[in-house]
Image (spheres, rainbow, N blue to C red):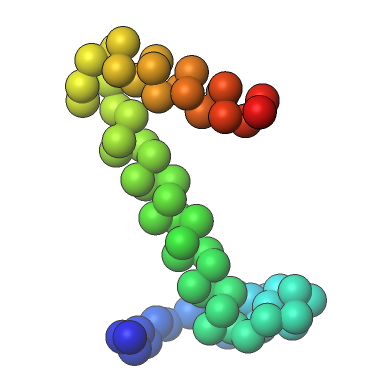
Length: 71
């Protein structure tokens, strides 16, 4: 595991601590969750860019996800 030091304005730090507290999690866990969301969004955008792969393949992926979601 890595350690990361970030600099934030004091008011933003306090608001993030309040958010973590309201969720019943640590500030560290909040940052882990937020970074996972950001990475998932980035991954989805880069995997499904129009310039990567065939349009048919992308549509097949979405159709598969839609079928799986419907059960």
